Length: 198
Image 1 (tube, rainbow, N blue to C red):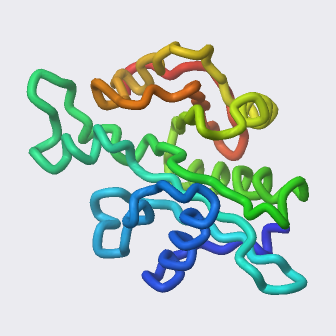
Image 2: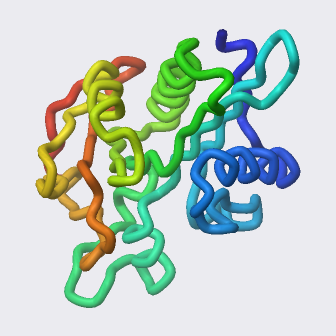
């Protein structure tokens, strides 16, 4: 399966991924997938899975630096009264979006995207990744999916613990996620133990 997963490094490839996400989620930001001119801020990993029989884009994954770290970077590295994120910019990623179109679900595409992302991020020096699921999704199915793939999945209402010695959620996030999940990247495998200060 890895031969059908490619990284979207050009703007036209990323627009294709944006269209896929919009078709699955419907209410995402029109610029959820960063253009290449913003790579210095978000350092995105954008993966695409094309069906080998039809060439159709069937799934995609987006992992970026967390918004709180990007916001801190834009004003010199730290938010007022907050920690400095400069030392951990390239040691973390937030799994922002992942989707498989309905006709291609239950074929292992999501698992293949996660496995490829894990390997690429670990090779790039990323130590921890995390994300959340929102109430409008199939929460129990996603809870099982992320648990099966080695993430620590938190209880509803439970906040992310400090990872790499930093907090990773923006204050006053609305709506609150159904749950957060996180994992540590070690080589090409995953460990779910929280990580301490960088």
